[in-house]
Length: 361
Image (cartoon, rainbow, N blue to C red; front, side, top):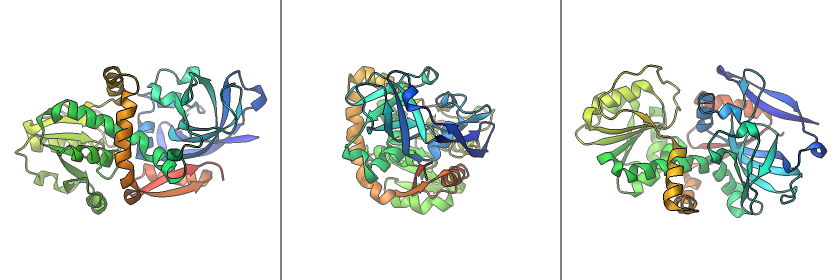
């Protein structure tokens, strides 16, 4: 039997294709290994960031692909169709990080009632969250539309949660306002929802085409289109969280706010227009926010289960809004996956749409 993988050219993300691979023989699986059929996965602009940073942050090593190509990691669901692990039965549902493919072999380790880890050698050396799988069979929070929300937004909202926690811990660096670029992106409006709830003013920066959607969310105090950023009052301290990765926008904002720019954090690359050499800018020095560092810090400070408990409370306050904010669209088959990938890569997916995909027809 054949399996299917969807791969992209590492040096030109516009080049992509579905390839046939040999489905591993269930009877020949190594001890404690699982053969998992990937049933559905989410695809968002965040996955494009994984591809852009594939070499730098080792995303390409997670799911090997032919020479010159990469398999973009995605969050989704898989069904165990064969198991050599005594504690895991065929038919179980797993939620976690998968390749854009129909199947994956997982070397199960650290198996507990709640989850397991893939101990495959090539997958080590990345943040532990990328190798963890939750066992979610029968869990209503991971079925139907709720499951779609988990795949589409839970990993992004974890990033929103950690940025919000980092800013609050640092008292927003004295800023009275927080600006978010790519305000229509799921990570941005998750962060806006959290910061807004703290009583800090949130300004959404967006394109003219997305401004009505951003205004409709209700979690931004003000919405400013990119061509009007110089119209903002520059007399109060601000913090900037950059989801867009747009060098010229970052420079424009720093020069406009000058020393009132108290924090400039780089989080995403939705615009993919970062210059290799950026000039010294007035105000706070732009720096990358690295989520695994904040998780490690808080796990140590909050103790076992502390991060999960606080994140769970934040997630339960966020989910009720998603019925208004997200329209889930489901597509199947290699052609549909390719179309969804290229539409996302080239900015053609409406901001209120959430793509759930499967390579199986």
